[in-house]
Image (cartoon, rainbow, N blue to C red):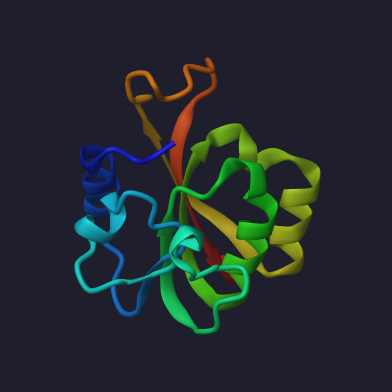
Length: 136
């Protein structure tokens, strides 16, 4: 589901990413508009984050929830600070917690967010922007 512009602006204003920033799932571009000058990937445009080379200070994205673990691991391999827009409970599956520990990452903060109106999934689970960092 594409991120609404107002939600992307709220997340970027809260976490204030700086330095080299990557949006690995550009989609309709809400985060890239909220972070002018950031690098981006979008598989539909031939730039697959999972095979894209580079190193960044921050990653800020709404990852494809069906590929959450792959995006989590790739993000930790190429950046020190990462923010994912997702259901909060997505971070607390044992395998994902283990991946974060093995990679030396910890959760810094979870910004609780209101779920956008339909067509966003109305799941009943809390939506959040989770900031996790290397050596935290």
